[in-house]
Image 1 (cartoon, rainbow over the protein chains, first blue to last red):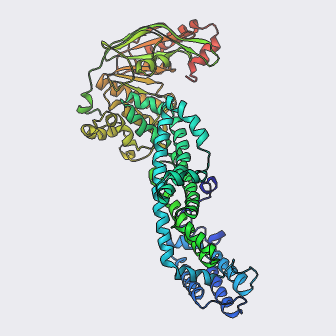
Image 2 (tube, rainbow over the protein chains, first blue to last red; image 1 turned 90 degrees about the horizontal axis):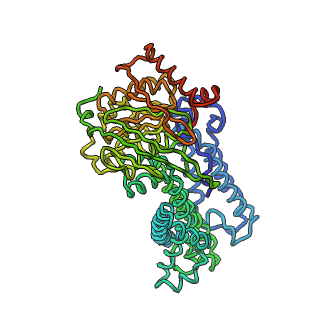
Image 3 (cartoon, rainbow over the protein chains, first blue to last red; image 1 turned 90 degrees about the vertical axis):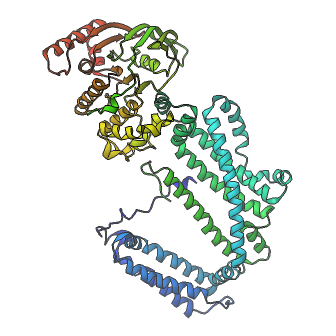
Length: 340
Length: 275
């Protein structure tokens, strides 16, 4: 998680030479302008010209995707000439777009065209796209079920973690009794509770929620607690002399001051929640992306496995982005916050 | 200038410190006498300076008046009411402005009324204090965007909007450059003259004490005691290069030389060091 938080940020448009001052150097250099389109055209040409060495599938989705990429690349090249946010984005992201297209090309070559990777474990992009399209209803439903389970578990765990963290961080006696418990129980991975969860809860969904909640609870509690306990004494002194009562001190001084730490806990909790979600779904819950993955693996339908992985990547990344957005909103006052 | 509404402050109250002693136990178990039987009366509407080298307990005394610390023995009263804990009637301002970094300047100033649940009635006053302290253009800025002087003005507004009966200033201008510092001294005196809030100013700076205060309480360290209380018989507005000002200044310096036994040490301490 720390590595995610520490990921260097893409320069904002303000940094990316709105006046074209930086044009001609580095990643925004005009030399990169044709790169995405050339990459897409090359990929298309290779795909159509080279013979297939694996049994081809009937679809034409990869060609369609590459055609769309080619069109997008041309649009991007045109955008590069414009000023403003989109133009800056197009200039800065052109090399990356080319890289993505070439990665897809390499995948196509290694599987379908050269057959260097064994089937059925490494299907070509066409098959994965086909699986994604053909099974879109099941995938969509699985994503929905995963989201529902995750949202319930995460909300419960984060709420419990915030409450515990505030109490343990604020009250000395709560810390005396709570800390040892936290130190002993907290580090147990939530997935280790699977045998317990299965007997303690009426159904698989409830036990899944409980497992995810436990996974989220520990980091959120720990970091909320340390944030609240480390509130600078001067802030509390100032608030007291301004007439603040205990509720104000806790919720209007200690908690906002602890927010950076609280969000760190929420990020760590989210990572733990993803992991626990997939484990819970492959073990007991008979729905969701994790379950889909396991099910398709059982039938050796690897194109569907990859399809599920692609969806998961978008799904989890999207949720992380949402959390980063929430953090940016809540902590706009902080200078130099790390971007996602 | 101070507007009519800002002048309708709470009645200033007198302050009484009786035989107050304070002892700490250090981490190594040694008992340290921070203050030894300090007695001090501040009349309602008076501005008094506490000066003295570090370790003389002047900040400790101020924190006890604020109610943030309890005396080991002795009593403290505001008017006739004993001080039992912190409260809005005694405003405190530190050397570090300690603005809440997650709040804009406006929301920082609103803290007191918001904490006491009377923000709605005081909203118009918030604007008044923003104007009064020249912070209107920065109302929506965050503390990290302010200069030291602006942050200190915001902290002053935050303390004043509560209409404290007693204003406690703990080296509030100590971290500012000379230029800003003198302007802020004028500002504080101007507001004080308009509102006559009983004020206790802790400072290292003899000139500041002379320029601003009615009386100067000189303290000595280990254990903290009141060495002497001096009246400042200068009429207001005062002038920094009034010959009588300079006379009083050298009198205090001389006295502080007598208080210590090493001339160089005393001078170094009078220069200003960490609290």
